[in-house]
Length: 143
Image (cartoon, rainbow, N blue to C red):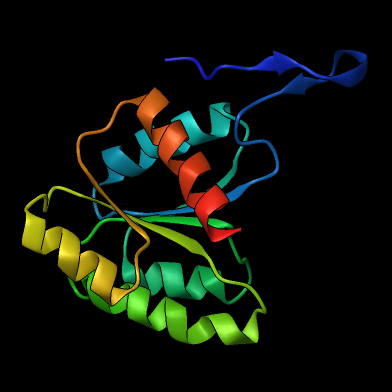
């Protein structure tokens, strides 16, 4: 799967997510790898974590523009995780656009994710083009 790109000034290659920092949080290593590869190919600076605890530690030193998080993770679920992220935002001076990317796809799951602090709720699986579009929309909505 290839990310779309366009030609910029002086032959510079532009990609849909150029300059965006994206944090992926999912307990499934293969899911992290695929999401990271698609986003990186689209130009994003990506970090991937396999638990809420690992992601919170990453946020101590690296603040992303967009967060893609699973909900059903062992230890700490995505709902609790996003509440903790939202509590940290004041110290960073800007909000993170947050997307729940999850197999929990019922209407009540969507309401719960949005109430917890996610701006978007997207069911898995998702293809590469749709993933890129979701990240672009999430970032635009947060700006």
